[in-house]
Image (cartoon, rainbow, N blue to C red):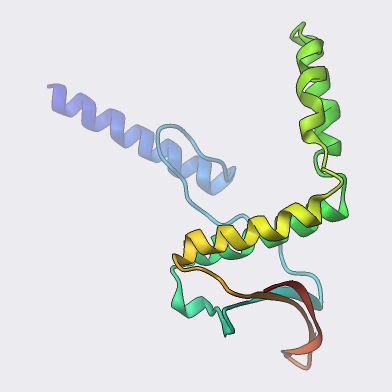
Length: 169
């Protein structure tokens, strides 16, 4: 009797999960939904980072996909943070949340941590080099990161520009 009830509950949960995923595209407890939530690529240009460690270009085929993401994600985040005021949009919402919770002084104490430091480039580049050393598991005598922009024309990507972005010796 218990097995039938448990089986029926499981079946109902599976059906609910399926219906929600098909019609609403959200995840329903208790199942994990893994998916890619990307917007359609609308641009004709894309920028990629080409990483050279100790004179050797790092290639995606040499790394598991998660490690490859670990190598590149900080570069994209840094570029975004450097171009914007980092958490500016979030700061107001966080301030309002602390105020509603009756603890606005807590935001005053931690709010400055949501600002980019003035010396962000000077701190990021050495940090990124040591970060790569930990991931790659060998010391880097040199690190060079190129920002390469590709233009999509005639059904293929063609290199439009390339410049050295990070260079350490």
